Each structure stands twice: as C-alpha cells, then as structure tokens.
Length: 297
Image (cartoon, rainbow, N blue to C red; front, side):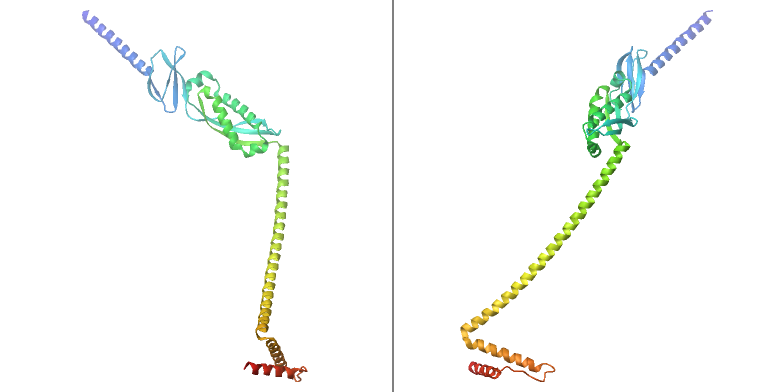
C-alpha cells in the first residue's frame, strides 16, 4: 500500500512538473514576439497603448500585454484619384492624381484615424481644387511640377498628426471637356497659322534687306572705281602741268606732235588701207617734232 502511494505521489509530482513546464513554455511563446523588418506591432495592456515593437526579437508580459495591431511600414500607393476642379479663368478640368506614403508612427495611425486611404484621398481632392483655382489653364498645363510640389507640401503638413509620411505625389493627367478641347485646338491652329505668316514675312523682309545690301555694295564698289579713275586722271593732269611748268610750252607741243605721229602711223599700218588721209599741218607737226628732238639732243 505504501508502494502504491509512493508511485501515485511520483506520478502526481510529474504531472505538476509537466504542467509547470508547459506553462513556462506557453509564457515564453506568448511573451516573445519576433517582428519582421517591414512591420511594427502595437501592444496594448488592458485596452491601452503599452508599446510599439520594432523589427527583431521583443518581449511582452504574457496574459497582460497583447499585440493589438500589426502595421506594415512599407511604402503604399493610393489608387488613382480623379477630381473636378475649376481654374481661375473658369475652365473645368478633371485631374488624375496618385499619392505614395508610408506609416512611420503606427500608434498615431491606429488611434487617430480610421480610414487612412480615404482620409488622404479627401485631403488631396481639397488641395487640388484649391491650388488649381488659383491658376489659369495654361499655367496648369505648363507648371505641373510646381502644382505637384504644392500638393505634396500641403498634404505632408495636414497628415502629420496621423503618423504618415508623404513620399511622393503625382499628377497623371489633366483632362478637359470636349468643347474646351475643340476651342483649344482651334486656337492652336490659329497660332500655328500666325507663326507661319510671321515666318514668311520675316523671310521676305530678310530677302529685301539682302538685296538692298547687295545693291549698296555694288554702288560702293562702282563709286570706288570711279574715284580711282578720277584720281588717275587728276594725277596725269598734274604730271602734265608739272612738265609744262618745268619745261615750258615746248614740252606740251612735243607731246601733241608725238600723239599725231602715232595716230598717222596706226592709220597707215591698218589692214586694207590704200589711201592715207593726212591733216594739212602734218608737215609742220613733223618739223616741230624733229626740231624739239634736235633741241633735246
């Protein structure tokens, strides 16, 4: 009987040890939390925020603390949103936007906002309408980068209380209604026609300018040629005048007599000339020339 009681006590003691070991194992399993690199765990104790667990091995108090929320901290992209807006020149446009963000403070996101994506979409719609209302249609088309920066800065300031970081905002497209598109196409065609006319007029103007430049250059060159000829004649006249001044009238008469002799010689040597016409004073001219030559000798 004592042996059976001893066996029973041993078995009962083992069961207690087994239960105790099982309880310890369960506490370890419940108390140890391994958080992935891409997530953060929000821990509550009796319904209140206790801690935020980062990536790696973390410990909590079993049965008192519990992981209430597992939040991904990866960057997220909102679905493409389209909202209508009116520019300052009263043109209705439809703007398609997309926003990228990530959660950096999960405790704020969990306890301050219910639908993060919906709240961001509503905020973006309001910002887009406000910013486009300050701009004309041409500015919306041309200054898309400035509009994106304005949306991103204002959105980042408004969602800061939700523990969210806006990493990027994009304007994918700006759509117009059919009537506005037709009016813009007509205006574009008119502008192209105007530019073509301006280009043609500038080409004609340039051609006239080049023609005028060519005529002016030709006139300048002709004037220079006449000036050179006049200078040569003046120089020759000056030489004759100097010769007359130095040698007297006989030098001039000598030159004239030589010219007459050269003319008669040329006339006599020409082909087909059988008759030679001589001036009446040709003998006197020869005599004067010989006299002068003799005097010079």
